[in-house]
Image (cartoon, rainbow, N blue to C red; front, side):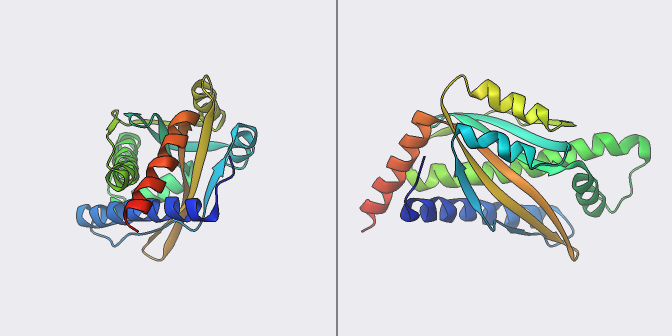
Length: 203
């Protein structure tokens, strides 16, 4: 799907509102100041999706959350595994025993993903005044093909993929990840229409 610059700018603005709210909450929950940046957002059709997955590290950590209501899809926060370890070590001051670190990592990254995904979906919901219902977030740490399996499962319906490059800046360290949101095609079309209706109502 080819969006107009006007439509893409509106999506970027909404996502950045959600990320800003998520960053504020993360800073309230941790001892460190965390800055979140979204330098680029891409809207992809089905034929372009595999190229995004191929560009990821071979082993990834991901938090996933399905959503339904006015819009239907699946949102993920994805990191290279090494970046996940760095992020958790900083946030927890690396105080966990080796035996506890795996479960700690799962808990910390799941909560971070939950906050960021909720921030973005909440910003979309609030902007267009539509209802979105979220599932409980799930975590996996596997080869990147696992993510492709999830996407292919969603491809039982025609879909659109929104990819937001994400940079965490914490303690002079930049940690890169991706926010990947899969929309059923009809849901994405409905979202664009809702955004345009909201913008027109503000004129």
